[in-house]
Figure 1 (cartoon, rainbow, N blue to C red):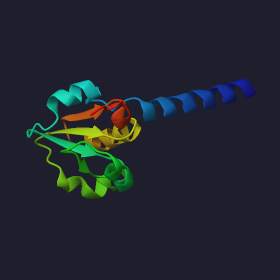
Figure 2 (cartoon, one colour):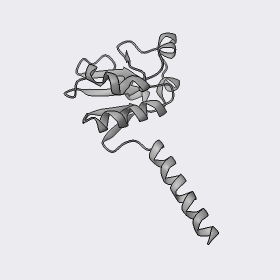
Figure 3 (tube, rainbow, N blue to C red):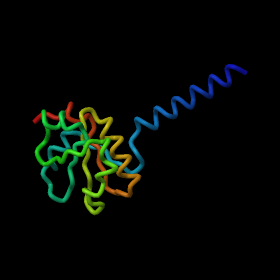
Figure 4 (cartoon, helix red, strand yellow):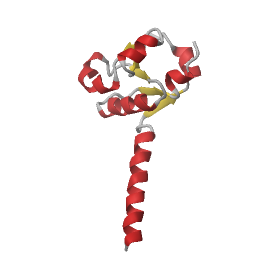
Length: 121
């Protein structure tokens, strides 16, 4: 009986962790190389969800800083009519932010894989 309970706990833990790592349904993924080709495109919105300190230390021109923990309260600063491209340091916070945007009804959301750690520019 104990092995059944332990097995269920392990399954639930794996399910939880996979849900946190995988991108949200409908969220596209792009590399920093692909980002380089579209950076500055006025038909898209670019947001950096890192902290203000991280952003001020190094950021990509044209990206607006909206820290992930402030995103729900500042969602009205973004238009649902334009694609939102989201970046952070490694891709984890931007993945979380992308999920929030998708839950709030944004249909064109793209997460930058690898984040600023992969950006060379």
